[in-house]
Image 1 (cartoon, rainbow, N blue to C red):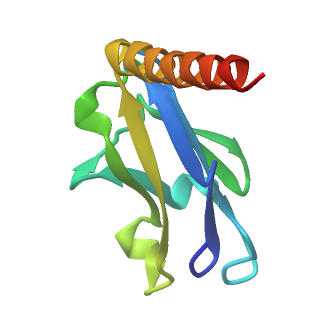
Image 2: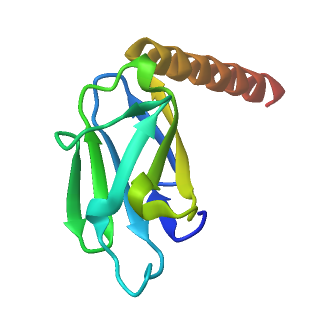
Length: 125
C-alpha cells in the first residue's frame, strides 16, 4: 500500500486465458471525499480504458482484463488520474501469468518427487 490507495489481491497468479481481476480502493478520504472514477490502471506503460475498468463503489475501481497472456506478466499499477493525484502516489501488484504447460510440468515434478519419497520410505521399512 502506498499513499491513500490499496490494490488487491496483493499477489496474483492466473492461468493463461483466464481473467485478471484487480480492485483498487482509497484507504482514506482525499480532500474530504472519495471518487473511484479518479482511479486508473496501467501495466508497462499501457493504460487501460473504460472497457476494462469499472467503478464498484465511491472508493473502489476494478480492472477486469479477460484472456490473460504471458504479455500481462509483471506489475500492474493503480493510480489517481494526473489532474487529481497531487503526488499521492500509487499502489502496485505483481501478476504472474502461467501457461497450462507450466502447470502440467509443475504437477509432474511434484508427482515425481512424491513418488521418490514413497520409494525411499518403503525401502527403509
